[in-house]
Picture 1 (cartoon, protein in one colour):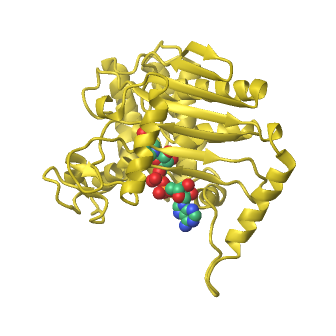
Picture 2 (cartoon, helix red, strand yellow):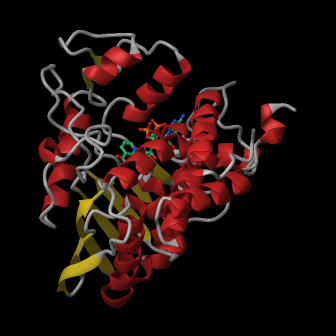
Length: 347
Ligand SMILES: NC(=O)c1ccc[n+]([C@@H]2O[C@H](COP(=O)([O-])OP(=O)(O)OC[C@H]3O[C@@H](n4cnc5c(N)ncnc54)[C@H](O)[C@@H]3O)[C@@H](O)[C@H]2O)c1
């Protein structure tokens, strides 16, 4: 059977939940982690899909992800709150914070939540879209362990600190920017290494600081920022936003692929804004207007330019939950299934 026919997103997600529960997670926590991974797979964000399940499980087994941890509000000042994730699964703390930001925005017009003691939380867009589903504008960013060099080269000092901004729209217009602040996400090197393919020379430097086309050498070295000092500056400021909740800066965050027994201790920031507290009707018109303007700004004879989030939205619509997993990811999941006694459904 062709891979595309074998693949069934819902079956993989259910399987993932069973594996995580076998590893000790509560059903709700396992569901949050797998919903986040499935979201990324559905949108073609392979770097943040089920390719990450293996390292999450290793961290659960080693204690770097604390299975029973529950996020806790440790400060609450009206429209702002600080959440301590107590080293639980990243998606659990992130989902809790997104719901809290929505609640605060419902009460105050805007809600800002800063989180600390979190673990890797996957695609930032999943949380921003949760906020959008509540009818609000969402901004979500987190820091990661330092894997990015300064623009002119040097040692790893900042994370790939992703940021997602999403605004409510309709079926035709749903802008969602969701990006790493490095030129490419670290996961793209992981996938390239798994698939045995080369990477462009402007993605990463090796341990000696020289450009490399070898993804494994890049994983040992450092990523380069998106658009030089601009991506670097954005990553820096994301660290500052997360630090408002007392989170460590990325220079001190423990690497996801380092010692699995040590919690990562990363931080995040989430903002929800209720457009109805501002100029809701005008805003909706402006959302449509800008998309129209962008779509009509292309070159004659070429496809219309896309708005942020449209490539992934189209991927999701075209594949409708049947996007094939990458072969390397499928192999890894088969091994995981054997280890946990829950056979992978797509063998
Ligand atoms: N949790 C973490 O530690 C972490 C770290 C880094 C990245 N990430 C996640 O990795 C994922 C991938 O990030 P990335 O930087 O590789 O994304 P990307 O480079 O594929 O896309 C970045 C943005 O550009 C937009 N875009 C791409 N092509 C476009 C086009 N032709 N026209 C208009 N818009 C276009 C996309 O819609 C997206 O919003 C994201 O979900 C991000 O949150 C997570």
